[in-house]
Length: 141
Image (tube, rainbow, N blue to C red; front, side):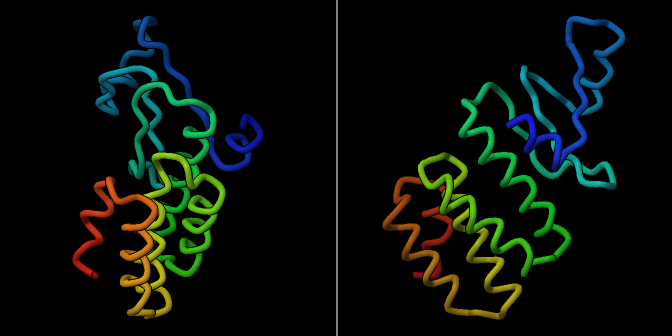
């Protein structure tokens, strides 16, 4: 995990118990620890993880953040395989349903594959029927 973080992120740590470091908590509106705030290269927040997660869930969330940065920049063709990797590798995590949803959106946006949304919604109902993402994708069924 440390190698993945070092390869893809510039880490910054602040301790809420150190008065000189509290400004970082205020700047990012952190209300709980740990708070992981993923910024893009322009310093704009793209993803947030609040509270402890086991390593597998944390890794999936970090991958979701990287994919989101691509999507926000409308680099849909690059984002789609990133979302696919999360679904394939971390299909049992909380991030997987969100990744599946955005994979469908990325396929639609990047390849103009109109049927991708329908396929995604059907897969969502099968794999993650209780998720909020199943509710959001139901419009395409």
